Length: 227
Image (cartoon, rainbow, N blue to C red):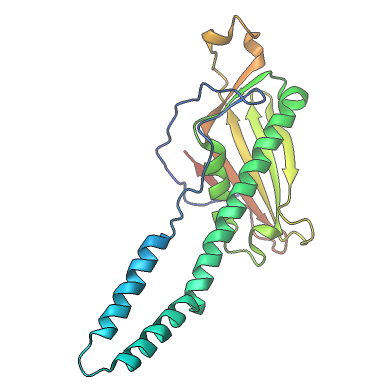
């Protein structure tokens, strides 16, 4: 396998105290990494342009007003601005969808595959994985909609499949993306020993791996490790 550049990140390794379906998480994931210009800033900028044209020398009142209206219309209907906003919104929606699917796979696999009662996740881990999955799909013909995503947990007994999903089942997959999460094999939480058996608590490490295999190419799979 060809191994691509490893991405080294500083991870927040704190864990939440809350429990939802036996899965411990950080605070609810939001829309990280994508910021939009606020409505207030847009309005102030538009008003500033209007008064600048209104007070420009050599312009009549009526022509200045016509110019200000044309400027507003041009800004609001700019194809580039609308395209950028649409792409950002789509990226956020896709990232949230991937995050929800991964959490659902882990929740459903607790009793059947992972054989645990409590699953501990690093802070915001699933949101980070979702973001990296979306980024890894950016250069594909159909983007993330052409992905067949499989989720695994690597433990003492090797890889365990915990679920699979597609964001858009109507699209024929063009590539396969394996998400490999890693169990902390040496972990034990004394605070839970009085509630659960020690072998019923499983903690995942912050590190994970993405393996991308193009279904339309004979090239070797691409491996990305995240820390």
